[in-house]
Length: 270
Image (tube, rainbow, N blue to C red; front, top):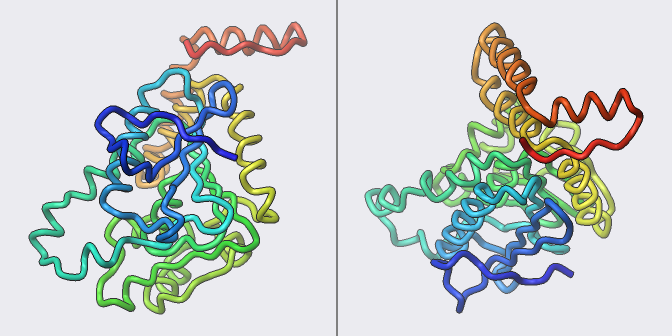
């Protein structure tokens, strides 16, 4: 079971809507903790997510992050009650793009461990991650159209990049959920597992990534994300430059020397 650790100083100690744990060297687990509300993304929960990811991004000891909602639900969307009476200006002034920026810009690899619903903002949160492991019970949807709105934290843009225009339009325009297996076939999900194996497999993957040279992992993530929206020529140039830069690291020297000497490398992150 994931245990709670202290949140960043400005997070409210009376509302632990995020549980933070460090189960092994280099690995952090962030768990959404609103089970009574199916982990709906309240303003408080979003603010705490922002702070936690800001803290983890700056923590050199953390090399990989697992994000989960638990064994029954990932996140069942935004908190509709907090939006129902709002006008356009109030929604604009919430500046959700600023709240979600620390997750979007986190340089560390993030693995989403998804069981149960990942609806609306929950699906968008999963799409902020780099790898999505889904339980057989998982389902994904963007149901915003059913209440007269549309995704507002990346659902239209990240979804079409993940699954293509025609699959994305079906999901966005009908609001219907897709199963974990269908999401895997579309390209939204990396792997489908029995529910009770999702978190252990995510932790195993995070431990594997944490044992890799962290500068190389961060450069891979940065180049992949930047290259998606660039021309192939520009993206290949970014790849070459990042590859060249890594030859200035001690971890590159250690990795190649360990390979030659047939021993396990020890990567220090420099």
